[in-house]
Length: 536
Image 1 (cartoon, helix red, strand yellow):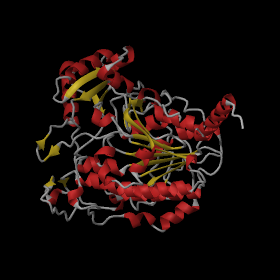
Image 2 (cartoon, rainbow, N blue to C red):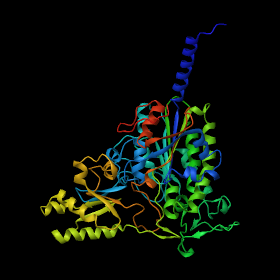
Image 3 (cartoon, one colour):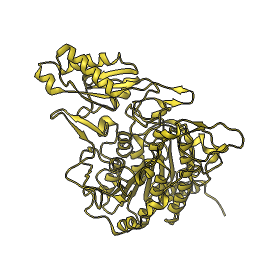
Image 4 (cartoon, rainbow, N blue to C red):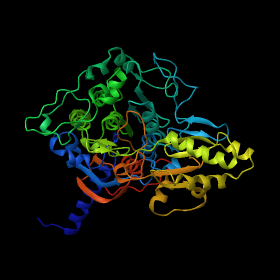
């Protein structure tokens, strides 16, 4: 039989195009956000990971080794909005969980909404909604593309769930008394029957750890700093560094703290996620579905115990086993694993702990900075409430009082920025006037400007020196800086026919939503700015 090279080439090309087209159209994207996870955690703890959890993703997916956020405000609500909208904070408008409204000098919460109430919440009438969100999310875009799309988002905290979800789909979080699943009346007036039954059976309680012990032998752990885990023993003589005195160690006071400060939160979240997939038959038809899972417990554990702690490390190993179970379940729900794409990432990393066995680092006292700044302005222009407050390193001034005194807001901002540079721990301070009227194309100022949204950001934005964090009770480590330990995060895209690879080029986190839109074959979120990642 005679072969025709040209015809063979055409056939191969057609097959390649067919495979590409199929691989580019998965029916379900699952976003798993491990809050406060640093990019190097995937390598640092790899030796103790199972083959089916984190390793399954990193060895079978596209791993972006230089994924990062290009702004200073690397906090949970800001970065979740970036992941879900594909936009910088300067565009999507989420700069913090709250800010000051200059019209009434009132503090405004990002999600608090008196018009709504929590559904089936026995603890009161706390109401939340996404009304203060301004940019479309990937879930919103999928629902707009096809009304049949199933969109669901879960988190321990309502802030995480609402910001990641946007205005669309099923959105659940844990209420603070019984740790049962609840939502806002904005999304639905009544919980689905299966969720109500899930709560009645108190399934979340099955995952609680009344006593936190290690998953593995202590000598297998890389970290040594401990403040809470009980019964540690070393057979090899490995040092155990107890950070807190026993009488000062955190005690879990209720079920909600169990979910936030122990690995139980991750276990309960992924178990509930399996039910959502099953109940909604996600990924089983030709409509594009999106499931968002925001794991808040790693952030709480990292912040309380430190990223160098045994508690944090043990949490990752337990999460790895939960992830192995969840991934196996997920792939069993579809006829072809290429129908599903899993995106693993984080909202930010974490600072080094301020207190270690080697000594304590200094911290920035926010309240002291407010008082000193108010006194500085008062000495020049008379006593008064010149400073409304400081939120995530943004100073808000009293515009009404400034106008009343006949002063220039721009001049006041400049003077305060200059003054704040004298405070210990402050490395940079830029006024809102400079942010609005200048273009900073590089360096620290670009990162600060990328996080500036004129309607909500403060009058003066502060950047702290490396490894400085704000002083808060019970917090050893925090996020919110422009430094690599906060901005550099893991990013793995697995499934959908994507070829496993280590990709070393710069990957901006605004690219996640637009890449997912390309995979799903839908229009990207309307405010998205990122470029499609190189996986096609």
